[in-house]
Image (cartoon, rainbow, N blue to C red; front, side, top):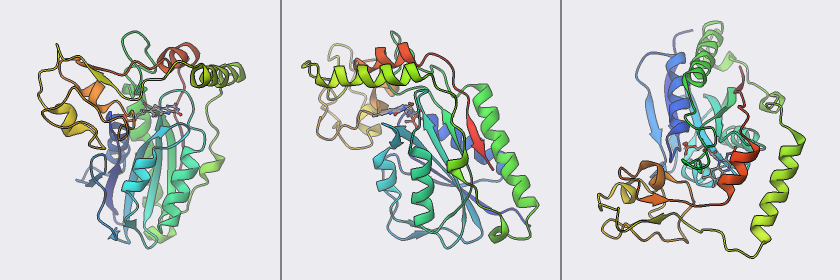
Length: 278
Ligand SMILES: Cc1cc2nc3c(=O)[nH]c(=O)nc-3n(C[C@H](O)[C@H](O)[C@H](O)COP(=O)(O)O)c2cc1C
């Protein structure tokens, strides 16, 4: 069959999901892709993709689920049997229900999920004191993502038309091995932090002595929790703690000092490999 039209749909506050999505897309086809980046804006209602297209979806995992705002922003998308690739990107702890959720969401919108995977990206909370999957996706992750794209292309090459390309069972993907101790200790540690009486930080903070009011954080906040000109304040009721403002600040003025960073860095230091199915 001829190459299908290729789209890339991403929600990616700190950029790791986007990198993985782009690498998968590059393995499918070298031609330019239609980009639907919903990090800052929702798709218009009733955006319908072409029937003979394939769309790579790459979204982050928050609390073992697909980042809720990603699904909200993609709500307007519809397909009539077009192909989709479901990619969940997580910070080396666990992706839990996220991949299944993404698959169900896409099926519910009329897509046929023909491939998928869970990839590791640097944890949004990773910092110089507590590194969690720092630097990922690295060259090996990106190679794995591109190879997934190449396997998808071969699947298309072998099919008479796009409607004949078989779907994949995302639930059948075996997650990376996880130490039961780490899971138990994380659960216990999280409960201690949540119920320990010490308030958890509700949003990143800015150091007014360092902030240069360049407006980067305001322009890149997915929820408008930071207003240009008033960058040292963050509206906690809007903040989703994605850390786009922390990781992107050109002068390092912003920090999100959560005790979860130490807990995660201590328990999930061992590298997890990516898992895929085509
Ligand atoms: C609020 C929040 C919750 C998260 N929950 C998880 C989680 O349950 N498991 C995990 O491994 N990583 C978790 N992460 C880490 C992100 O999934 C990971 O850093 C991802 O690469 C971020 O994607 P992005 O760069 O596209 O924003 C969480 C991050 C945030 C901000």
